[in-house]
Length: 418
Image (tube, rainbow, N blue to C red):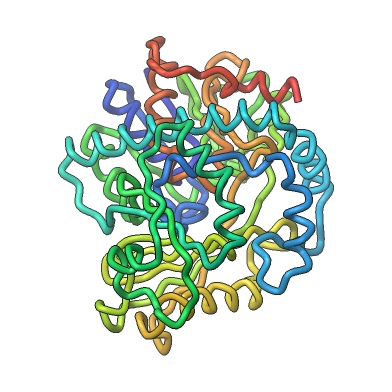
């Protein structure tokens, strides 16, 4: 089939790869001038399937309220809040029931473990080399964190994830550069998890997809799809229509605008995160892989010769304003655990990116209900961890094949019921 993909982030590129592998004629369109320029650009890079869970969970409302009034709280509201944000928060609150949380968690984790397997298959098959490290560790500063992490450990057990509860001494053997001046009461070590440079992988896989015949077109702001010809694409500024056998929408936040004329109202909203990336000054003072500070919900990742610190969840505000308070938290956590690891005088990359999130957590993958239009969107903060599996599932569905994974609750019907 002749297939168009709208969106060249990590989800769009993995989708292009899988459809090209299956022999389809694939064309990818993106409004940016290069691939993986938005949510995929400078995220934490952690692939930890056991920690892929919905933000909508019992008790989350109280946690969010406490975070709002904390100097270094992980969740912040920024003005202006749009009507879209307010509506999203209402649906988010309704999804915080125990029943909904358990269903959505199971959906996301099935996909996350499948996605990690598919990621490893691709890397081995194509002999891809990119900045990555094995292992992931959650740092517990004190008794409060030990208590708060217990429900999460039960989630890991249920998911079948391999992990160990370790004391501070063993944590420092795994990550010798951890600052001894910062209180550490223990950690959760997940040896099968990893960290990798999402954008670097995306650019490499783009090249592999091109070797199979996929074409990429950048600087293309695609106009909303139309009911009369939903499988035709035109530029927002006007252009002759290009007709396809199928269109796959992987355009993140822009997907809502593209799909609205088809009667599909996808409740996506941007939840912004920040990151700081800096060159390593002294390798012995830097992390070997990735750690996450449980108290501040900040990840510190080793990506080749750089360290990336990422975290925070900001609802409202604008994409182009980096919040100084958010950066202050990132620098604080970095200094707490790995002082002197990086050089901060030059070459520091500060980034703010929008996670395109659905209120209840899982992405939407599959048929849109409009013939020939397919969806692969709404991965939120787990886009990198879910991308390879989501793409393979989508390709199987387009080809009329059984994906071999339970897809209950991942279709667009879930949103229509909400």
